[in-house]
Length: 357
Image (tube, rainbow, N blue to C red; front, side):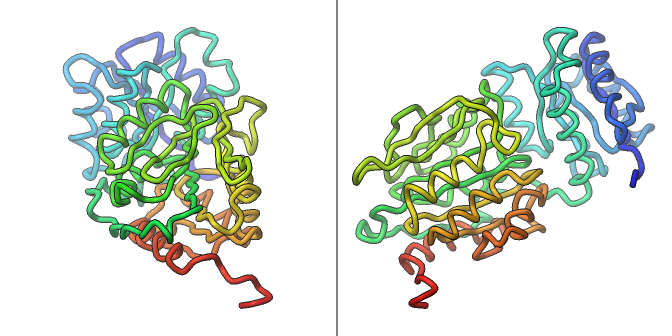
């Protein structure tokens, strides 16, 4: 059943990019392009007059850039913002700043006219706009890392052999920036699959590293998950955790998309179920779709502790909802309580089997 169309304003100083975005967005039956703006000052006027549901927002523009628009609108008008960024290191850095200031998601700026016809470009753009429209009335304002509970340090004998795996998508960058700094410097290894373009993941890891006590970096093939380290799956490739004897290694692989994504949360979670068994904690967080639901269910069946972020604190309650429906979750928790809960579950030790519980 069709609902109201999503009124979308396109803001970019390039007429070429505006045309490409209009062509791509107009191909979705639920999206209506209601106007255009060529700079931030014009964007503020169009937002006030047109009252769009979603704005696709360029970062670098004359008169007033995208960050300036966010600072003037977020929290004052019911509008969802999707940043349209160049796939460069500089573009990644300013995109993460925009996400911290309240943007919902980001997409790649088209380089050629053929971009509008690429299924992956259209699908990503449509997903971002649809998600922003759903989340705009309930998206949390950015908060300080201290709003999350602090995960207590664990003695080495309790940490040994444990791994934490996290799957996350839309709303992930600000959510992880809020949560991960609460883990102490010597915490157990954490592996993260965040749906993100290849050009962004190294900058995203650096962004997190600057905020965290743990060391954060983009994972490479045959990495060793070590205490005090957070490894982020590189964009465009799957990340698995693989056991070789008593040791765990990270495998980075290409291969086809799984659950519509590469990297896929299901790939990471299913590998953790095989290689880590009960000495793992799986966390599925904000995001659209169902990636991770099957994998975290396998983790729970293998004896791991499993957590889903709750609906009120999720930017988009898609992936956690599907995981709960799949009966793959032990605990549904607000974001602020997850770090402390992870440490307390490991303190409790391996989950009792059904036969001995």
